[in-house]
Every structure is written in structure tokens, then in C-alpha cells.
Length: 265
Image 1: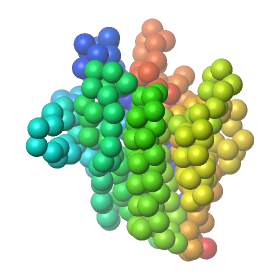
Image 2 (image 1 turned 120 degrees about the horizontal axis):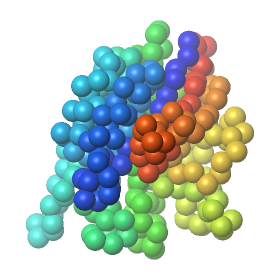
Image 3 (image 1 turned 30 degrees about the vertical axis):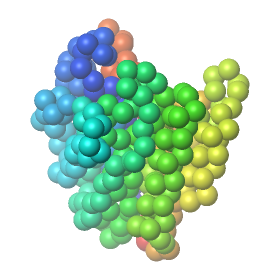
């Protein structure tokens, strides 16, 4: 069969931060999710906004990672949960979301510590086979301490794949905040190393189909399993399909579409 996936950071923060009418944007995003058999969203932080999506998305199986990470005594509480949502036409037979341990920035460095970032792990029953799906949003800031947090995030995801998904087909998607190449042509050693760590256990779908964009941070990785063949057929930035009636993008991130073929070996 064929699996049509969308990974999308929906910029779901309050209007005072986004500078636009966030609920109005999400009302327009919601119906567009129905074109996909599997959707992973990031920055889906606010319950009332999520209802705008959930009210029109017709996927029979959904999972939302909203819990806030417990903090040590004396630390400021988190404002948001993980902000991760999964919409699937396939049954979800197992779920084990995890928070990351490290973050950096309150009012600076992208303010990552306001949220309880982490990843979703979900096992899907896709026809006669199972596919393990991971959806994540990693540290966003650009400083040395942000790099330290990203290292912990990447290590935790790789460890989870090795522990949960040995021999299994895997899809890993999300806003990784990792670039192979910056827009000015430079590279970041930590980000490049983390991508190498990911690519030791999964394959970047963009690279697999020789896509033209090496600067993106919204990524979809995959691998086949011992009994499941999984292949990327196409990768596309579908921003043209996610615009309002004035031609303005519905998020500050591009929606990434990947079409997979799957079969039992």
C-alpha cells in the first residue's frame, strides 16, 4: 500500500507572539489535514486551538502529547506541554511519549524552556504490518547551551528507536532544528554530527529521493524493518497548498509531504 504523510509545525502560539490571528490560521489548516493518511504536528500547544483542528480532521485515530514536564523545586513551571499531535487513519496500538531533559532559554534563545519539548512514539497497524512512528520538536536556539540541549534530544530519540523499534520499520518526523547546510553555506558541527547520528539508524527521505533543499529543518526519516519493506517514493514542500485566500503562508514553517510505499517482506 501507500502512506501519505504530512509533517507540519503549525506555529500554534498566542497571537501576541505570532503576530497574526492564530485561530483563524488553524481553522484553515484543519480541513487540509484530511488529504493525508498520517499527520504529525508540532507547536500544537493550546487546547482551544487544537479543537479547531480536531473538529474538522476526520482521522479516526488521534494522539496528543500535552503533558507538562515536572520541574525541580524552585524552578519555574512550564507554560506549555510538548505541543505534539498525531492524526492517523491507521489504529494506534502502542504509545510511549517522552519529554526531553534539557532546554535553554527563557525570554531569549528561542525561549525553549517555556515548553515541555519531547517526542511521541506510536506503533501503527498499517494493513497487515506494523510501523513505529516518532514525532518530535527539538531545541530551537542557536547558542552553545542550545547545542547541548540538542545533543541530549538527539541521543534520547536514537536510544528510543534502538530500544523500542529493534528490527522494526520506523518513521521519524518533526521540526528537528538541524541543518546540513546553513543558507550562507556554512555548517554547524553539532547539528551535522546529530544528523549523522540519526542517519546511522534511519534514512532522510529528502536525501533518499534527491530533493533539492539541504537547508530545511523539518525532516522525515525512515527505515524498513525485518518483515516490513518501507520506501520513500516522493518528498515535497507543499507550502503552495497551505496558504490563506491572500496567498500568505498558514505557518512560519513549510508543510513537508512524503509518500511512502510499504509491503510485507
